[in-house]
Length: 392
Image (tube, rainbow, N blue to C red; front, side, top):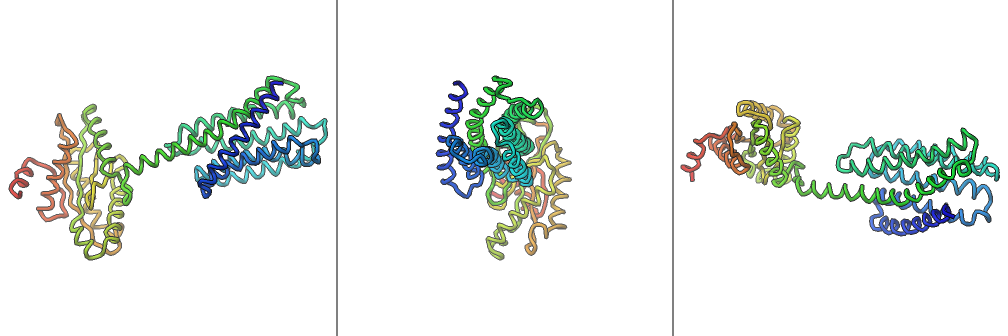
């Protein structure tokens, strides 16, 4: 009686999720993740529907095709995961092999005496499929979806363990799992019901976490150059200042400005100007250290954060970077000659350093680099304030 009630609840859930995810899939039909998630519920619902009228169907349908629909529904779940992650396409061959390889056994075990083997073959196929799906969820390195992937993958492993246990009882012990252990039958039924809820909700979690991450990324990253925008840069700068206050390790803030950029736009057009901005940002990321930060704060002006650098180390690094722009200018643009001026400000073991102070000092140093003829590296000194005051 309890098992019948659980199965009834499962079928109600199945119908509800089939309708809901059908509407979700239709709203964004090109999204293959949504489509395959819906197909998983459709195939499961088809299997449940055929199961209700199995007494009026040929055995090859009731014992073969119906069993395959449940296996195919978990293949659809696997496809949804593969398209969501954008990788692991080759695992689809394993999914196809599991489905096709199990069909002859379903057809061989159609008799009443072999019903438990037929069911256990379905359990084994599902267990193998969800194991593969769980593995690729855990192997993915996408940081934003880490916790939903771990949660969903862990559930799939737990679900697979129950299904493996049923297959073990049937094929190794030669017993009907439901007769051998009523607790195993109950656990398996509950696992099916829970899976119908956990899998779609897990996908909703995955998609929402990624969407939130993308929105945050768009809010912090410059859309043209894909380096940090002003907001993202200021957050990174505040983190560096907090780290400096805690550990006292000097860092350098650099303002870099492309020389004669307006003239470049006027001569070659804004499309060429945009290409140069993209090329420069990629050049900075390629030639700077992995720990350094690159941001664009507007127009042709970039800001570099160089952690763990003294003033002397920063000057050496920036001079090499400036020289590399000359030597490898074709990496930035094939026809346009680009130079840059750099103004740097170092924390210098000073107390009370703020983001505003460092930005101000780097801006003054950049001003002096421009005044001295451009294509220069200059470090802030107190003389810069006097020079700016005289020029004002």
